[in-house]
Length: 638
Image (cartoon, rainbow, N blue to C red):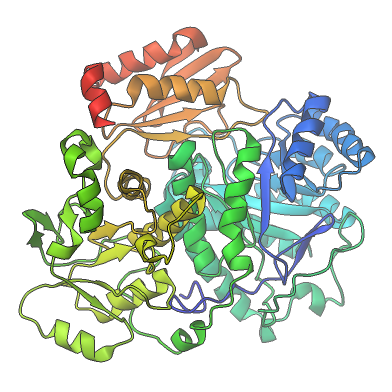
């Protein structure tokens, strides 16, 4: 199966266009940026204001939750209020459990998002062995529930997102496919086949997970499966074209001009646009890094037509991050891409199943790397010299290997003679891509790993142009692009299983570059050295203040190295979306919290004022609590 044109040559995936009001997604359009408001949908004034605030900072599409028919009906007043104020931003209704709410919402908005895992199912975590006949009967039941919405949306020109979430797969899918990327893809395709059978094509897909590795694998598998389905259509023609025309006229005003980039060969009938997102990414640097690993790596492979960065912060803070992630790909015109387009070496990784590249074990500066050792953090000598006086006080953010003393072979991955020499060596060599090459970082290291014998460990870099090489001192340094670049490049490669050590050299501040290196390792799930949090972004379903609650939980648990805690605002993002968290803090009712161990609820209806303390007690009960270090020690390690 093929998930992109080439892992070494950038080409954006060709898709059909889906219109969402005045905004086109896919086709020749730029990568669109969207977000979601956080207030109660029944608060019309607040909903209008938050949408206006998002539009003011460049949000192109706004999503609003509609958990009930009453909420869905109020979308009429929200949309009317926005249009009266001259705001034409398309509105998306977010639907989970109630088909009736979806039908009501479709009357008023430009797009409806449905979650296949709970649209027509109530999740009970039951183990059921379905016969083929029973499974077919379940699909027929879903068809009966889903078809009225599809037909209504087709008639009224409303778009749809079929949005699978890793943690909310139905019992039917879980029992047949497991909690896997394959299950996520099949869940979405079941609904897509129904839509296509009814002649409806104005939809797109998403495959969200809080785990970047799972998210990347699911999207790759989805795109590969869509390509296979499209190849079955004679001549790659769109079904609606074969039927004599476009299936429906999109709701909204006249179409906006298309993006001037014309990258597309004619898309197949299954080439639907893709919405990218890492769900429950969290806040601060950690949330931005985790989002960049998942979203940035897929954009680098040409996958993705619209993105949402999900942060546990006010929604307006998501937009600059999303814009910064999308901008390089909206403008991408790499001169060197043609040079790499003809390359087709055997990949060192399976794109659909994570496995770390097997290498030999070596030692540098008395530190072991490669093999089954931890992925190490490397610094330049100049960086080490600036922080040498405080290394012992840096706790978990210490440099481990100095680049100049590590005997690292630096090569151009296009230089076949260099590979011949290194691969002929007796023992494993420490190898990296040479600085100064005009090559995309991800493609360069993939090519290096493909041509290098597996026994040789690889040092990953965030950039091939170190910050110290800039001709003039860096002033007014913007850390966000540096963070996103490092997370995208190093994180994508780590999720491919490539890399035995990392060097962040695009950030000039020594302490900040070290923190960034370790945080990328943590977010990629490669090296866990601190507490891991899965925190959902707020929305109208949230039953407590996520930002203040997350801060409070972090303040009391941040010293629990290796413990994973999920903080979920409601049951929609509850037991399933917590993925592989050790403990969960989930809104159960207004002012009440349920606590989980894994995906199992163990304590119910705890008053919110007591819930953080009860969470600590639960962690103690399961033997994962340690007392925080004294303040003086904690400060010196910061």
